[in-house]
Length: 284
Image (cartoon, rainbow, N blue to C red; front, side, top):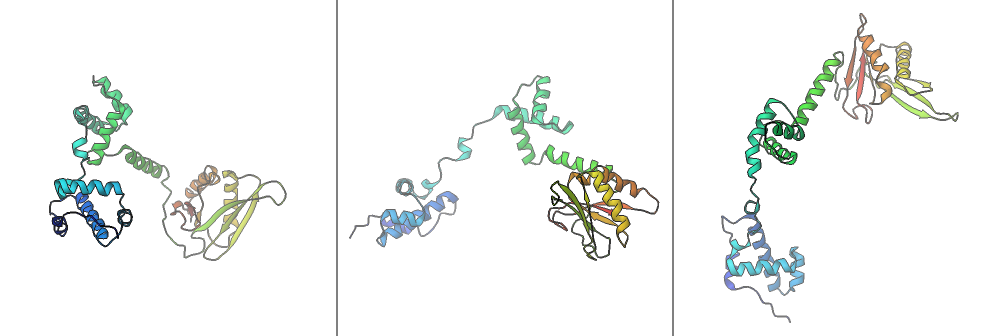
């Protein structure tokens, strides 16, 4: 029978309570050392006890030595980030200038570095980028990418005033949201493209083959679809393919300007009607 060598008796009494001001890392290591010691007391070898606790033998012996020499607080991680963090005097001096320039005009780190150089402050773009990251994390300035995305969305919405965004809306009337899709077929050897329209309310379908997959073909199919359906067509949902842009979109915009006719571009959520489909043109 192997003889179990453990810590002093005072350790086991101390392990029963945790110091209130003990850091989480030291608290966790104290619990692991205590667990391994309890497993050793019931006769498990050190390797097995460490494997059960999920700790390497080297870490266990190192923590055990530190615990004997300095108590529970000695288990605190000595590689503290705050003590080892290198001071950044250049960044501290440049940060106010970066904040002032970014408030005047949104610029990236490269342009900001050039602007600072023009003012006689030579600093790398990486340092400027770190200053921007700190300011954004503190909420002092706004991330330029998010601002540009918002501006682009507002610009596109203004350019397509006849468009309307639909998310998660389900059609309840015939012609309210007719779904359009395309596929390629080669029954005759050469590729041909089939445009298909399906009304989910009445299950009425219409299809036509074209030699090319272009926006002009989509425009022709739209005109044919309006004439072929037995009910008024108010909206059509399409995907983000190039065939549903250009001439197709121009045709929808032109129809929207006709007296007594209203067309709106509805952007459905991805997968709302067709899996992976997004835009939807509404004609009424």
